[in-house]
Length: 575
Ligand SMILES: Nc1ncnc2c1ncn2[C@@H]1O[C@H](COP(=O)(O)OP(=O)(O)O)[C@@H](O)[C@H]1O
Ligand SMILES: C=C(OP(=O)(O)O)C(=O)O
Ligand SMILES: [K+]
Ligand SMILES: [Mg+2]
Image (tube, rainbow, N blue to C red; front, side, top):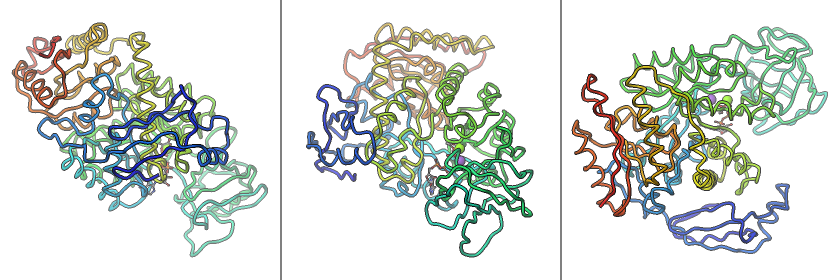
């Protein structure tokens, strides 16, 4: 559904009067959309219900005009708009990551996603050319500069995965039970019937007759019936679809047979150096099995890059679950990559695994992204399934730092709408958690070892407890590298955390942290002047009402020796 500026939207949805589950907001208007078509479970019936039901809501949709650039404050345009419209306590806490692909790569598309709340744009280096990725990165930086957005850029490595590069058809192919196919790494002209080309020369190394070949984690299965040099002849044992870039995994006696491929391949190193030179903010590493590649990459970045780039580890293998704590400790954040994780871990275990990873990240104070298939049906359809909404709600309830769209934004027709579903479901569940005051129940174990670190941590823990107990409107924190902001975020406070920093890298990294609104400002050693300057600015923009209460945490360290003296908590009522 294309929503143009100032158009009238008509929602053909059956409303179950008092049970709105989604609120789509566009500009000033609010449209409550009910649980339409609950009784229609199949996709066909759902779309029929959509067409047949009566129009129940109309709204005037406001476009970009209401966005003002507010570069002098260093607060991004989306946060500013949200603050004006919803007040401090209505600001969204869960961050949103969108995978950029052909369906959303024009400047206008990217602007719509930024306006819709995209905090981080993800580029999956598996796909497309460097030129294409460079162009997208440039567009995002341009939007940030010219339109006052604050969207960070993440590249995601391909890793040494084996996938189909050519299966002879433009879209999907059906493999019938008993049909025999040849898997090869040889290049060939045109297309050969029942022949599938894999991307990696050594794909069949160590594979034996009798091994099982699983496509895309279970879309279809084959058994290896013959080796012909490096090619494999395989018989389909479980029929299903072969997508154009389907992933291949080989299994023997219930275990993966392919091991020993490097986590960061030659191509990945080249992509990472490309990311460094293009000034990305995050590198997400695929198929991390232990802390070693993360440490290696962080070393590489610190010697090669002139600025700080955060390294995220993707948890998507059985092995990574065994080494989870060391991986979380070594990295700057985690992605629960449920797509590939579901290939190695039985599907029924994925929800518990997700919850456990999220818990450990919270304990160790690292941001965590829940990724893959959150709103998968929206790749094709304009409304999510009820089950998808439940999955998204659960990620928010677990207070994950961020949620990610993959195909929904990269190739789907409803990317912007999928983003609005994430936004609205987040708002709703966050409000519920807030009302139940659930955050208070989650006391976290102590992290710090040195006395100054323990002091910072205790200050942040106490600050959040105070803010919640006093019903404070907003927390302001003055932070150099973002550490204090993240320690506050770890406590999942009710009010939003405005993190003032003069370090742009810290600002872009904080974009991934729950409840933190990073703001770039010039800071001085004089804390009182920082506080009055920033509160005056926010007030003068009309974003803070008289009587608003702000809890202020400061941690600027002009000299290490006197560090603790500069840490403080103050409560201010704005007059
Ligand atoms: N940069 C891109 N160019 C073309 N297609 C892309 C790009 N990024 C993502 N896609 C498409 O979107 C789908 C979902 O993205 P993602 O989940 O990142 O990849 P994958 O399915 O390969 O793990 C991909 O399968 C691919 O078809
Ligand atoms: C996010 C994931 O990784 P990719 O899309 O790169 O396969 C995943 O496997 O869920
Ligand atoms: K990837
Ligand atoms: Mg993956």
